[in-house]
Image (tube, rainbow, N blue to C red; front, side, top):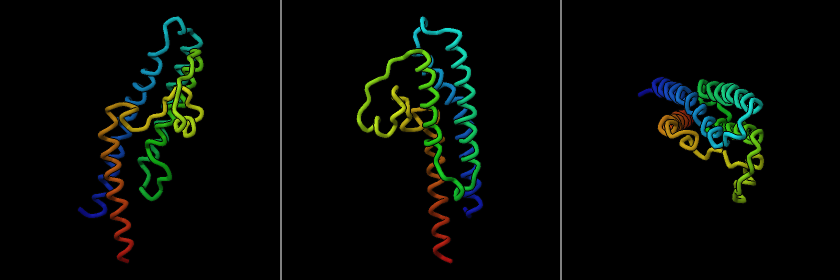
Amino acid sequence: MDSSDDDAALRRYGLQLAEAAGPACHRWLDRVVAVIPDDRRTPDLDAVVETARRRVDDDVLEPLGVLLAADLDEQRTNPLAILRGLARIGTTVLDAAGALPVARDRDAERLHPDDHFDLTPGSFADVDPALHEPGMTWGAAKAHVHLARRRTEGRR
């Protein structure tokens, strides 16, 4: 396989990850909303949830698609870092519902100080199990392309 084949495979895996992320991120938000007791669900909260659904698209899925479509050398972050933005969205919903913060360990508090509901995903599977395989496949392909490019640069 030559480098153009590797680059094409990376783009294909990125597209698969982006396609899987849409439904997975919306299922993630549905799971956050599902913990809200029925007596807390009001028209005002429904409006917050609808805004949150749009934010998933605008603040997470759109930047994720842009990242995954970019050339490897132009990528300045990674998909999981973008997916971690879901925590801000879920926090907004739970705050609006009057949920109480959860106990978190010191590292979680230090790394994600605004995530008082411990929503920040640590892996693709934490967003949704359906993201595990496409996320890992994309990551392996990215590592392969990265190493191949650096080897080629070293030969020049």
